[in-house]
Structure formats: structure tokens, C-alpha cells
Image: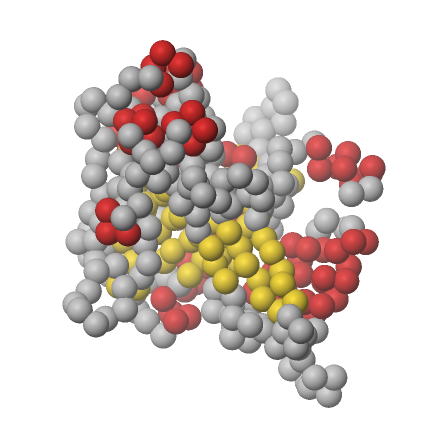
Length: 342
């Protein structure tokens, strides 16, 4: 990255996206979006991967733009081009020459900066726009379908859920009063996991001091359970969001992303220093994910549970979720004397 670009991006938080683009010998291309960093986390955590269809190279005489029905191609190009880096130009050119018409996922990105409500540049704005246009729930059941948010990092939300969690985050994914269930490993689950708790705990970010100031969050927390996949003892580095029916059998939409449950990933209302809050949204992180909507897969809903022989959507967590008990508390990096307890 050139010095000016580096200076620009240092004003924000971090580049948290995980995206790979692969070109094959036959000139086809595949995009992979994951939740895994290129470091020593591959064996110690559960991760999520979305792999695109193999997208062929367009012929020189084809009139097709190769666009996806979800505008995946143009959104990917916009994300690559926002870096304004010469090293990425060949990749942008290659993406331009490829047919993405078989891609049925929406690309959801966050680019650091300040955005007007009508000019989406964050996860929250993009997801909201897609859901408003393409997701439908039964009107009489809609208030009871919970949003499930599962992440490896929880942020600081304020003195009550109305400060950010409901008023900003939940109101755009559903409604401020919709049930919200946040899946995050308990201290006991990390300690009883397969791998060393101290090493695994470094990938699960949540401050003990922050939790002390927002104990109300306990009412939203649910245990990490993946018994159906045999992976309950391996902690998650995934970040997934979905809306499921109250009977836990249907999925209205599903988002796999790099964005954790925090303001850096999803954004917050912009307030100039010493000034009043505006309706603009300020985003700190570069994030990327894919939003899957049943409509684009020829379905009314994804099936979370179904009869033998029917396709079941590959949710990582067991449904129904299990709420924290009074003795549970979320994992945080605690003093070593506490880590030794089981």
C-alpha cells in the first residue's frame, strides 16, 4: 500500500475482511469468503466458508456483462476499486471479464467512512436494503421470529440495549422489539474445550470490564452448542446472523460475514466532536460477507429442520438455542488463577 493510502486507512480501525480470489488453468475464477485469518487459527476454531460457483471467462464476442442476479459482480468490483491500489487493478480487470450469472448470494461489504442514510456503505445499510426488498415473513408471525447473532467478538453497547443494540443494530435487521439471541461461548465452555483455553481465548474478544458495565447483556446471551455437528468443544471464530421461525424449523435469511457484533463492524450514528448526533452512519472497519435469501434459491424459506431426505440448511449452532443460566458468564481474558479452574 502506498504511503498516502496507508495514511488514509489508518484513520479507521482495521481491515477485517477475509476474501480470496482464485484463477484456474482454464481461466475460470472462484471467490471464497471466510471468517478465518491466515494465521494459526485453522485447527483450533470453527470457521465459516462461502465458495462461489466456478465462474467462466466471458468470450470476447459475448454481449453479456456476466452480472449476477444479486449484483454480486458490480459490488465486488466496487469493493476492490475502493482501495485505489495499482496492485489490485489486474484483479479488478479479471473480475470484469468473468461471468457471475450463477452466483445467487448478495455481497455485503463495509467500507470505512461516513455515509448518508440513502448512500449505503456499511453492512447495516446493505443488509437492510436487501431484506426490505427480498425477504418476507408471515405478518402474524413476524414479531416472534428471533434474530440470531453469533460472533467471536462482542463490543461495548452502552448502558442499556436501547442505546445501540436495539435502536441501531436490531431495528435494521428486523424491528427494535424483535427477539434477539446472541451466541457467545461461556467461560466454562472455553475451559472445557478441546484446545488450550488461553490460546483459544485470544480469538474470543470480549472485555471483562466492558461486561461489568453492561450486565443487562446477560439477558441476550446463549450458549455455544454444536452437538449435531460434533463440534461443541471447538470454539467458534465464525460470525453468522440469521432470522429463524419461533419453532426453529425455518430460516428467513442467513448472513456469513467477517463482521462481529460491535460498532466497528456494523457502524453507528455519526456525531461530530462536541456536536449532536446525525442520521449519518460512521463505519470503522473493512468487512465482507455474503447474504443468502431463499428467494434466490427457488425457496420460500430455508429448512433448519425437516423430514428425512429433505435438504437442511447447514446452520452451525444447534436449534433451539440454550440460554445462559444464572451461573454462566461470557468468556473474557481473565487472570491465570481463574483460567486454571474448571
